Length: 461
Ligand SMILES: Cc1cc2nc3c(=O)[nH]c(=O)nc-3n(C[C@H](O)[C@H](O)[C@H](O)COP(=O)(O)OP(=O)(O)OC[C@H]3O[C@@H](n4cnc5c(N)ncnc54)[C@H](O)[C@@H]3O)c2cc1C
Image 1 (tube, rainbow, N blue to C red):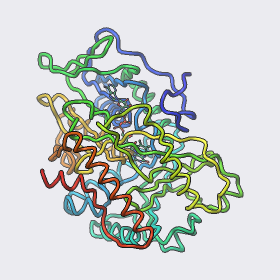
Image 2 (image 1 turned 180 degrees about the vertical axis):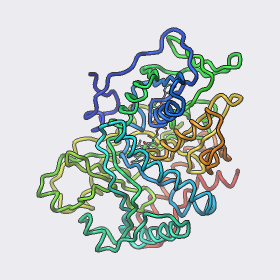
Image 3 (image 1 turned 180 degrees about the horizontal axis):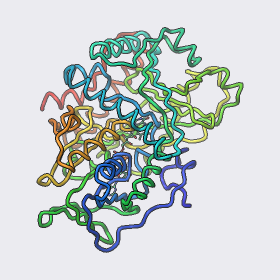
Image 4 (image 1 turned 120 degrees about the vertical axis):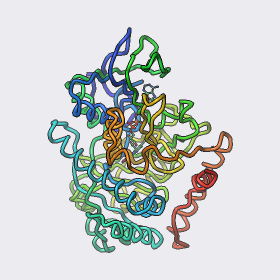
């Protein structure tokens, strides 16, 4: 067994993996999938489920789960756009309800697949608790509940301050909501487990293989790698934030880093002081949310608080840690749980998510109908990538279904400005969102999230 070769994350340390072969020589397949994360694996899974004899290859540059899929918080939740209220405002009631319901269904199907295929990945279907820590955040919780009611969605429940604090004992909570359709998972174990399942059903999972070129060749597609190549009828691009390295998506997907800190295991007495029996995932209602959850071995994963766009949208191993954000994460953890003053942190890591101007993922088709893509989940891809796998299956099979009609499929795609304007815009947006978070927490003002760069680029069309 070779240890996971990703950043020094807790998930890396607790997930082992035997990498697949490198692409050498020539191969011929029906579908080649570029990217060994959740999108790539769920697409392979869905294709083989629909057409068991299909010849499918997945090609991953590093190891399966190297990207965001092996580094995330592990929340499989329904959230698309910045909030349900935004989704409704931007796309109307019918489209918003359909998109939400598609992802809610995915949460249930992820649960069922884990069970049916015996994937050991510490799945807990404990729901999501969204908490407010100030009056302005409470208004946002109310807006979510109002949106859920207007869309006729099930599974949402308002929480009073006392109910939120009874669930998890933090003196910072002033209210919140519970949503049923959410589970937490060990993400690296899930994505690796999926790789094992699709391999056992006949897919080739290649690792350590950089795809350098994708081009048309006599009515088929050539996927060129340093030591070999694969010819396919169709290709699926599932590289999320890394898609920004291609000319197709350089201006459409912006890599943004988000970071996580993991505590040491808490003692039984410390857990008694916190509660949290349900193992629900928790998010607050800041612009730059805090997301946090328990692990099965008794730790707390604490993430969010800020997000960084590096100049040129660069993705590089040196960005896998941020000492400044780690300091802020530990401070906000201790503010949320003052009863845990001595709890230390053992792991810190980060990774890139793909931001789009619409703040929704983009799914579409290029190269005369032979290259399909699904990427840019804006930090919310764990469950939506399952929905994405089904959308990409339908695209490959040429099916028109409810999934291919969702509001983020074959939809208008906006572009970011070129550098240095993009970085300046992203940084000004970040600063203004952080200032708004601070103002709200100090009890001043209220209102919606206003990401300046995204608003400006949508206006420009
Ligand atoms: C720190 C962090 C916390 C997060 N927390 C959550 C959360 O709790 N809940 C949630 O819903 N979402 C969360 N997300 C987002 C979520 O992880 C992603 O949206 C999701 O994993 C995207 O999956 P993917 O398969 O599309 O992309 P990725 O998992 O990023 O996979 C893309 C893969 O493509 C490979 N690749 C790139 N270029 C090439 C190439 N040329 N050739 C071959 N391979 C290539 C990469 O190595 C990578 O493995 C988080 C993300 C991060 C970084």
